[in-house]
Image 1 (cartoon, rainbow, N blue to C red):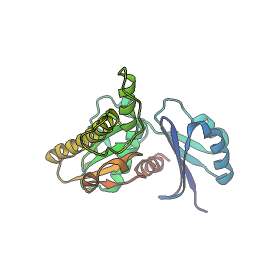
Image 2: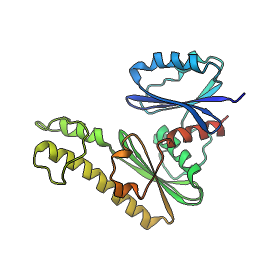
Image 3: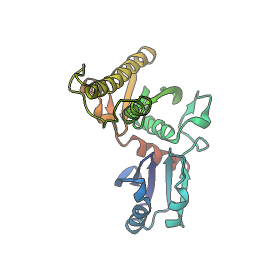
Length: 245
């Protein structure tokens, strides 16, 4: 009988759960945090024999205890810097390297071991991480994501509206709303393009791996340069779980 493993990716508002058999995902679901308890009950009914799992939680509120109460014969790891990692890092503040970035770097190493990787994650924040062909994390960058930029404009000004993320109709907006959409969207596009071109001048060959809930929003001319893997986080967490079992 194949052993099933439970993988949790807990963000600021959503939780993604995956069930793996070896390297294969046999189940996945995304749900809101307020539905967490009911979703755990449903998972327990569907997968009662789980024996191990791993959790990435960037919200700062641990969900490990609740999970362990449902699978009391299983053991679960929190993804953090003290685990055995498949990479070394030049990060001088390892304590602040988030569990999401640790998982993404671990997943990227599985993708291509013979090239330097630029990992681009478009979620609540936009994160960039460089890992060389010797599996050394060279560092990265963090900037606000789409929704955060909309929220900042609303919160830090007196009259600008809070809008939902929308693809701009034109480069130059004819209304305030259009101008906000254009400024945010093309600002992110230009930021990503600049980062990619700068990275290419420093590292060759360079493989660019894109992931995250907003990766679909970037333009086709950027996507042509990127290998998009929406499952990179889950694969990285599964890899870490196996390394530390």
